[in-house]
Amino acid sequence: MPQDILSPLWLTLKVSFIATCFALVLGSLAAMAVMRLRWRFKDVLDAVLTLPMVLPPTVLGYYLLVVFGRNGALGGMLEEYLGVRLIFTWQGAVLASLVVAFPLVYRTARAALEGVPASCEQAARTLGAGEWEVFLFVSLPLAWRGILAGSMLALARAMGEFGATLMIAGNLPGRTQTLSLAVYSAVQAGDDARANLLVCIVSVVCIVLLVATSRLLKPRY
Image (cartoon, rainbow, N blue to C red; front, side):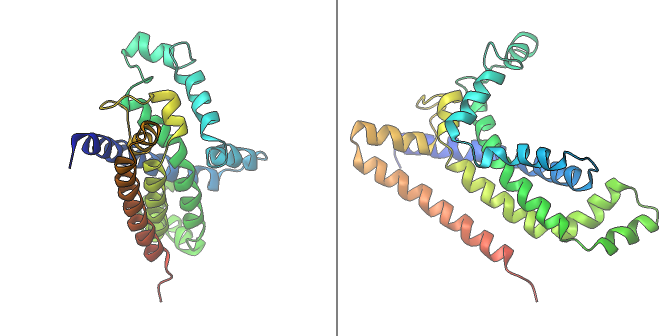
């Protein structure tokens, strides 16, 4: 397989896998926190956490630039104190993929955790377990199928991320060019053969992930 195919494929797999791992942890914790939260504006917080699912990718990219750009609220501090720069780097692509993948994990994790029988959690509390112990040893084991299914959907979404990645990470071959960006570049250059091959690779991987997700979500009897 030529290098101009392997490079974006490898980068896409690396970026989407790292982003999904972060989304899995953060989404599960956020789902647990919101589910147990007693606050009158809980629905507003839930909407904010779900917002990246419905906002246009270019809007998400703009928000990321405002926050993590060189003159952004966090970007300036990261570069000045830690020497970390996210703009036009593959780490920026991870951030963009994380933002778009997070809501998928959050929503499915919350639905899965809400499906855990309250009697099981209450029994653990009665036996002296704290909230973290209840979450780690009761809720998660009972909800793992739904959370894993959400993570696989998040992985597929991260692999297909385009707009936010283009804005914050750019389209630099060998550095930040993921499969989606490589398809865009191939089409712009009129290289139909390369575009077709890249599209087939993305499509096959996403179909495999969706089939696996569907099987995970099938009810158990």
